[in-house]
Image 1 (cartoon, helix red, strand yellow):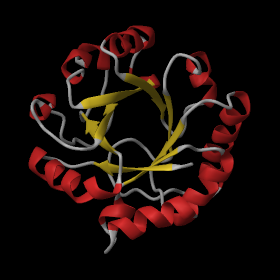
Image 2 (tube, rainbow, N blue to C red; image 1 turned 180 degrees about the vertical axis):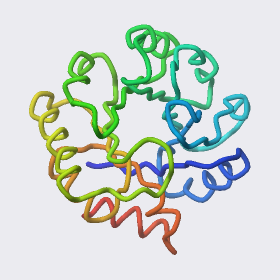
Image 3 (cartoon, rainbow, N blue to C red; image 1 turned 180 degrees about the horizontal axis):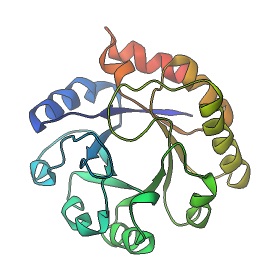
Length: 214
């Protein structure tokens, strides 16, 4: 069954806490976007020390949209975080990062930008828990999923990976709405990360259900 993971992409920790509280009753996980302004043009909250002692019923996955994540990976391997996703394009130290994350009993994920070939993920199919395909450029929240020719490519990537690896957990992040969710699920997505669609809805519970059922 597909799982919906609310995405939180904000500039300060107080807003992050408010959003987590909003979605706690309706999700098992929260997806925290971390942008450094180097790997991305956009800068978002990226202070791991804010999470020290933070309590929530949700499991937290952190999406590190940062350059050379090996330089600060230790700071993110703290108790509230259950999964760390880093970008294939941001580092050459993929094995080092995976080993670091697994070394503290957390799940590892590797992500690629929309323009990156899915073949870049091929060496990691059996080495990480999550493969993430970004459907929009990393950074700003609320970017639409382009359903034209460009993101037909994202759906093809998803289909290729699923055909090669039936057991892989594949996450789609970016511009997820009801129509996008339906297409991604048909191609084999397990996890759908949604931000704007949930937080701008009048009823978050209903919005989560809509994404699951479509």
